[in-house]
Length: 135
Image 1 (cartoon, rainbow, N blue to C red):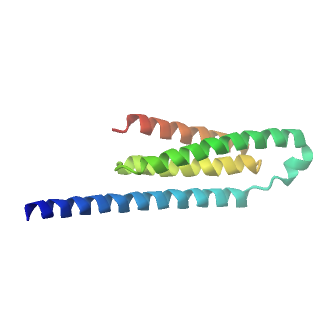
Image 2 (image 1 turned 90 degrees about the vertical axis):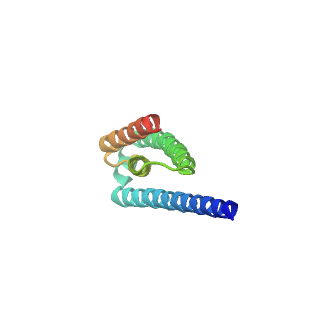
Image 3 (image 1 turned 180 degrees about the vertical axis):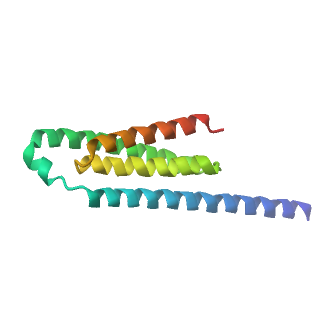
């Protein structure tokens, strides 16, 4: 009897943790999709593409590199959500990853380049600091 109760409580705890992980992952993917959509809607690269095509290619290459970094961060955060995490860390991870994704799209759209670069680096640094300090 006691063994079955212990197994039942362990199963409930595991299923609650799995539900929390699924909720965090869903929130992460939704936030990233929303930030990419808003950044794509906001930017219009046509002026830059015709004015200086060589610079536009260079900046889009940088955006592609930043996109790979954002995808790596997304994968790392999805993996991190396999285990319980604090609320503050989850907020920083979700917010940071969505800002990485949105700022990468802004750079791809050649819009607000300085703001997008600052946001990208601040988000990356904040995620690294939280990951380093998290226990």
